[in-house]
Length: 245
Image (cartoon, rainbow, N blue to C red; front, side):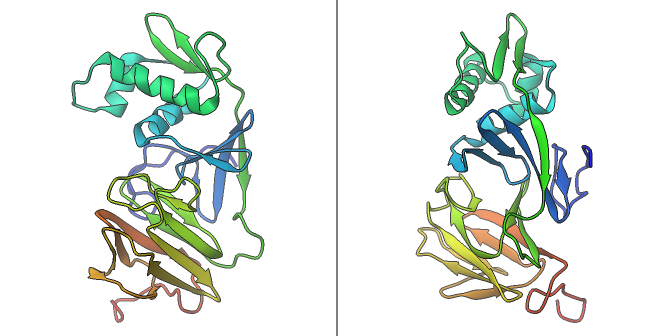
């Protein structure tokens, strides 16, 4: 199963710039002691989440996707700040953030190499690891689809929030550290707000208790819009028809 280059709107209406999206499967890039799940926007070290700001994560993905080629500073600026002027020091700061997260350094590069007067390159050995859903016995695959990312949900409890340990990690200001939870069990998905500061909405209505989710339900965490999707839905997680919408 090789790389798949997807066009925008190929998968559930999300805008993708990165490959490695598989229905019912997730692909992880493994390098050193790190696992990078691009679709889930998650970096882990020995099964513990590693925090990266959204721009730093995009930088790491850009470098690792183009490995072993070097990427120019100009191309990185256009990717990270399209049609926006920013100081060159902003890119250097992101590179330092990525290196610090990876325990890397410019002097002895394990993963991110500086190419003098040009840009940067990912210099580590990365292996693509495709695997089925994270927990055995899962019968329903569910996702949260955000504007530019796809978060895989698993059987049982999925914490949604800014806490890097959350299954659905959304590192944005209007989202609380422990914002909400989605519990998937017995063919049904239920969303519950956890006393978040900015609230949780389903189908445009704030919720104050557990709410059953259906395929294609619009959800909002604080100011962040998402769509709940269920693949090969069972029981309560049904795919809606025109009669039920």
